[in-house]
Image (cartoon, rainbow, N blue to C red; front, side, top):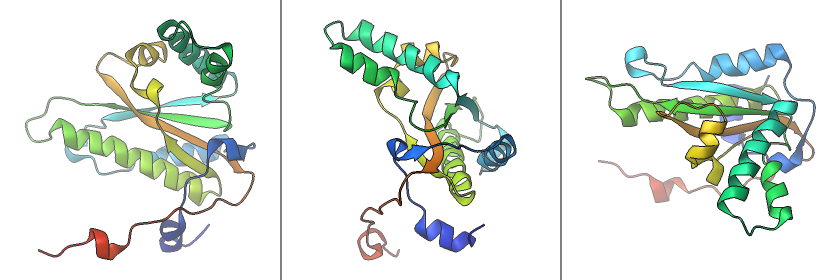
Length: 187
């Protein structure tokens, strides 16, 4: 397992199309989810949950996405519908991070949504620490109510994103990072 600081300094996203199997074992997935649930959570509200898409579940979710896309884009070429159908098929594991808020006198909705984001980041970091490639993505279908309903989300739930996890097929290239001198000020 890599040194924690070095891991955080070098973590990078791996494109799902640059992933293959194997994905995490059942024990590794449990570790990833345990770490994903170990985030700042003011009020102990747990304003997030996980949906696991593995094997045929990825294709079933893709069917939901493709049907909604085709209905909302009746003139779309068949190739575009097929692209939507394969949205979750590249990585062997996709974890949906579901976000919801609960009324609370001391914990505003925004803070609860940030907790879901922290959960997504911990999930990515845990998968990376275990040696897998990981990527946190959204897309139109992450915000489309018909898709969310088709994936089983409740009316008051949103999708913070999909975490794609798999074995990288090649070394991942880093992207430019901001210079601290451009993003840090002192008060």
